[in-house]
Length: 423
Image (cartoon, rainbow, N blue to C red; front, side, top):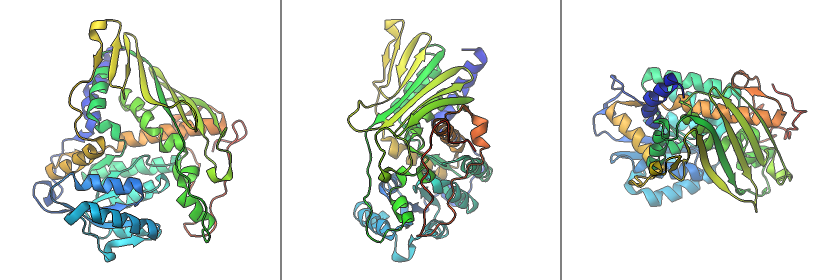
């Protein structure tokens, strides 16, 4: 690896691990005091409910004061669960529990200090912008968009958050895992020499699917099964595999890939209930100094493997296994330190610690680059064409529906490589 790149990676990696920027400006009384931090949850599914629990464990003087979801029943279910598990940190009332398409605005406007964004990815750009415009600190689940216009919006929003010294912590949680941090740091410090290539595997089984109920409109059906509609999830290589792709971005010093080619399709999940997403993607990304081979699959009955294989000139590493093997057996390494807190807790610890201390965390840049990396991979598999990072960023493909209403839903169009056009 060239000396200039080695220096860049070493100097940037410490900041990359936690995304912390020292800030001379203390934004509020919360930074140094013991005032109650009020938290609002937007998106009350399983991930949002879990994130609320993690947030309440991150600071001794924090309360959940508002909740919102597009569905009233999902809001009610989450409230029931959190009432039991949070004790006196649960301070949501009927007046601060909101449902409907504009529930996110009502939560943000309710007087909270921090918001948790855990709705389907399509809604992230608008909700993130509204929260930053309202001067809120944010925990932002991954991914952060489903198309190029969404990513452009998020880039602008996180830049505005940086100017305002607002904290944004990403749900790309592996960056907050102590074992993964240690493994990545050793690689960046040269433990396996120059990185030659990276293989990212997210080969797993199928996920949940909710049968259609009487009275559901097409829009409600798609919303309740959002995983299977590209306009809502970005496809599973974006919604799920982004965790793996983010580690490849991390190992490349948080610079984006130049271009990619790929293949994918619907081999098993061909029925209408699986919307228009593919069930497998295989994408080769070109970075300035290496290639990243990314494979993801959601199929039953197949061999599963979720790990990151880093191939170096002097050895190799597996990030989730926390191991490094080198040409010199004496240098073989496996992390044997403390596991530390769960990464799901650690990311919230970092957020609330930054709010209290005034040291700003903004994970916005890398979370958007990794999201766009996933989107450009989907564009490559859907079209069969070579897609550059700039192509994806400047794409005119906007997956926003004509209206947010409980009626018609976006048309279900299944991509055909070689036929589907890049927009």
